[in-house]
Image 1 (cartoon, rainbow, N blue to C red):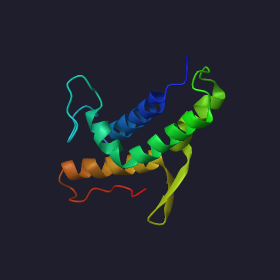
Image 2: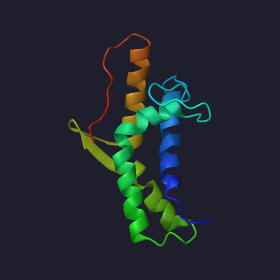
Image 3: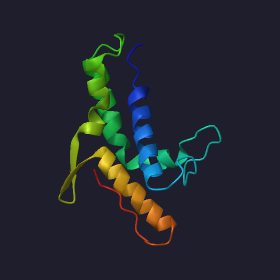
Image 4: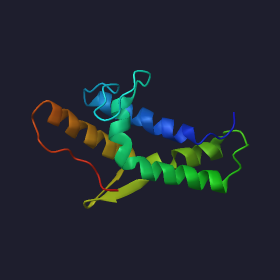
Length: 123
């Protein structure tokens, strides 16, 4: 298997879907994204604020590494880097998955009518 920049984006989609399911939401029922063939429309919606971080990491990784080499431990390290790095926002330091989980819980509360605000990190 060769380096495929889409793998990092798919990884972010899977992490986002897990965060949504953990908050009691279904990842296929999107707010802005709609596609009958995409089971992760809501995951795509929630991931948008984090997309520049993932895109930057994938671009940097592809530029610094030979994309024709097999995906090995080293390649997985740079593909997963955006998800394991700690990012600061509003005085807190968390991984992207932590920020996604918080945003998913906030979205669930807004849909259920328990909150009118959506908690999205400004990373």
